[in-house]
Image (cartoon, rainbow, N blue to C red; front, side, top):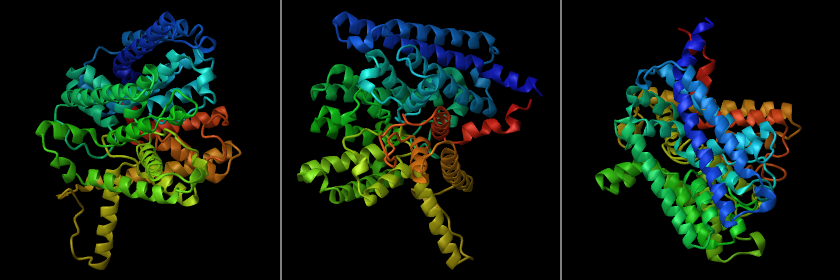
Length: 500
């Protein structure tokens, strides 16, 4: 039996090695950026000293690990991967990315390995939670760029990027794609997975470039424009400043970021469908999109009226900006901040809780349960209520005019149950590990499981600095568990996965 796991690991070692090669190249790009910063004097000497060499070393170690995995793997075509292999491969890619992505934090910033792993996993999962209490005084420019780049890579998905780069993965690519793409539906995506991945990343890159150019035009420095374009389109939320977006004090920037956050919370498959058919009506025909827009408008309106009195009163335009930005940053799980959420009223925090649970659309970079699952659960409940009144009548659950397969409804129900069970177990475990209240534990676990970032239910600062190593490892596991939507990671503990 011991041979079976080794055989499975060897089957997926080569693809993981290829991903580490890509990771090493990305770290090297950040190191090269550091060289350019030094050349033009675009540095903060107290922080940036020695950063370039440390990133080159991190890139070298990552490439070396990739080489070892590539050499030890079985010479098998990725197209021959089974569903089991795809699950193991996806999980190992995310584990390897989180571990080796932590190297720049350890080598350059001198962070504790557990803290570095937390920060790396938070980046790749686009959670945006941080254990760095002084971002501007601790992280060098190249590491800040790497920090933002991890979120950009993780936003659309490391594995989807792998499928896009290696389009000849065939049937194996389809299994890998399905193991990672979030949400129960993928409307608008083309049957050929390699082509789908390429189109998704093309749109992703285009949105990033457009946003970066707009931010530069609005007066944001080039370096910070690039970083915030990465972390906005990925709905990650890492910022280059301790005060987050509020540090720029630029209302136009906040409006633009809010717009791009909301756009990134929409199913990218829907965008492709519109581009392919040139029919904007596809947006209106999507019940998930309509539900997403309705939720945003309703919550933003409530925020506007409920928080008018903050900071001694605001103008109508300021109130609207804060309401839209706050709604956008929470519903898309981005986590940028423009104000102190701890000052919110209990009813406002209730709205925040709703947004953190629901999240954006399936097939987007946002976290949470996803709007499509919420709609399916509501439709199932409605059908059950009707069945209770008229048990002899068949009540079919429909979405966008089509009957929903019972297997999909079962999968959605299982996902929702796993989400809340994991939330409860995680909160209980955190109260046993740390001396925190149940409310704080609940908020922290919800932040990580929904890949949210901010922790508005904390009693103190909005970061995870105060927690011990064991709690941070628990949070790290929760972030990856939520990003891979439970099944991929939990499947690894099923004995059948490792059997011959």
